[in-house]
Image 1 (cartoon, rainbow, N blue to C red):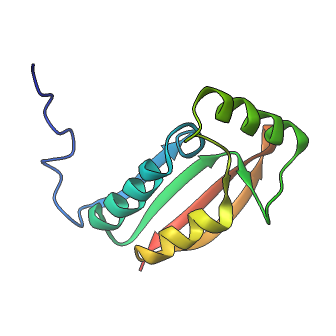
Image 2 (cartoon, helix red, strand yellow):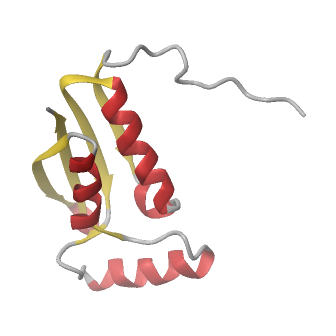
Length: 117
């Protein structure tokens, strides 16, 4: 059994200006989102940005196409799914990341931008 090296092991805490996360939150277990927020908080410098893009539910609902996509994801893996934006933001805030902007994008996706305090 070989162990792959940790790809972020050599990144100094508080040294990054930007972390980009595209189409990951919905197609991974919730624990991956928790890890994203935690490592973003650790690696971003004060004022650093976490940019996230993908489909979300807002206030518990989404476009019909995203609701169907959510069902499809969950049929493949019960731990996947289109996440409630409010829950993602709550976890980001718990890790010291503040939602600063949300932009509606094509295909019913959102760009969600957080900044480390």
